[in-house]
Length: 626
Image (cartoon, rainbow, N blue to C red; front, side, top):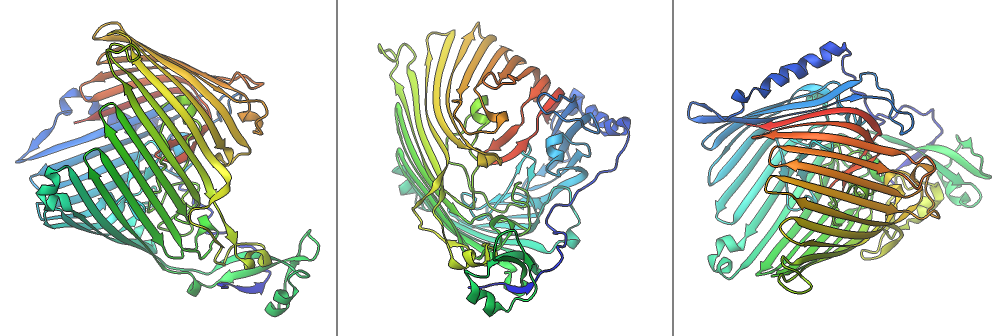
């Protein structure tokens, strides 16, 4: 089916979705620091305690993360216009019985450079709400966060480290008419960084969710260790449609009949013989303004066994991330686990096809801003530095894969298990793109835009491997002082996930050794190697093996001191990324100071990733709750 009209060659006009620069007012260094200093007054210990106001309570939290940047051409740390930068925010909440209200102030006028790169820049009251709930109903007005099921249709959430705040401004109602039965309804406009001119927005979101928990309705099921929950959700996004212009390329010899039938008189030649370029448009009438997504889910468990599953579907949603095709989207997430004393087994399967679902169809797909749903990464998540540099980023528009993991504890007080037992974890994960058969029209016009795109066999794996991880770790406590963990991973990582070339194939080996001097003092040594063979077809900056070493000394529960270094010893430049940090904890307040270098790469949380530029400098962070 053709959803577009060919009308000839036209002069290219600027695309409205190429990004809007939110430029903050420029001021002197002193003007930049004044708001930070005002925030620092909050560090007075007398203020950090829950405060009574009438019969209610005031609580909140505060965070500041700042850095003084130093340029370093060796690692690619660029010169920045304001060397002193920082992110700061303050939450204040008031609770009185079933009623609560609150607000957040954010100061990101001169943010850390990785936040500036994603346009998370500005200041003001960015979040406020009023909420009332009892056993029957909960009603919220203002900003709110919400998730339906696993998030395949809706997940409005925040992650401060990633610079994501996808809260909705509007209203939410939750009703629980009977125990175990709950209904949710939401309406709102999704936040987009610091662009708060909602009156000019042409988009909004509506959603319904229902869930039945039979174990809560039937106590006998719970008594037998059985839980059974079913649910379903429906989400609709509205956005006013406009004509979409794009270019097509036609081989006038190979596809003469099509060329002649369209009566194309205005075109431009290309450097390919017999191939012409002309302009086409998808009329606004052919772009759906209401895009619906629905899902159904199941959660069942009996004793040590648990099965979870959710299937979601989305109607045709031509948008920037899928190159404006009209194919239906769908996703399936299934996981199963079994646990008993000393043994745990889990497995999961995920397939996602054309499920990038955003509040605005022209939102840049490189960032998670304006993302309405969430397609998780089901592979094992690592906190180890070198593996974290190659974390798998979930691909909502095309991925299929599985993960399996076994946890086993060799019994303690045995010859193999030792006095305290030995823990072993083995895992395997593999993800591919999906199999695609492009519709015939895409070959005729040289693009998939304005067509149904492709067809795909649901359980067929594509040819391109995206990520593979085969790993195990062994952890054993020898006595009350010594503990050792050994780990190994073999990974395949498609560098296209970071917008680069090649397939990284590496062996990751390491150990973590902890020496507990006494109940207060402890030392921890971490050493990792990522061995990358020279034959890997990688960009020059990514070639060669890595080493990472960290030494931490802790004086529990207040002091933590660390020194670390990443060394790209297999690369011809042999760059070092040293870092030193000290942290102090007092009650609910944590202060940390660090100095060192950070390599360019990615930061990922649960399969959602963003780029991180190289940096060098002195950092200060303060967090507290009250």
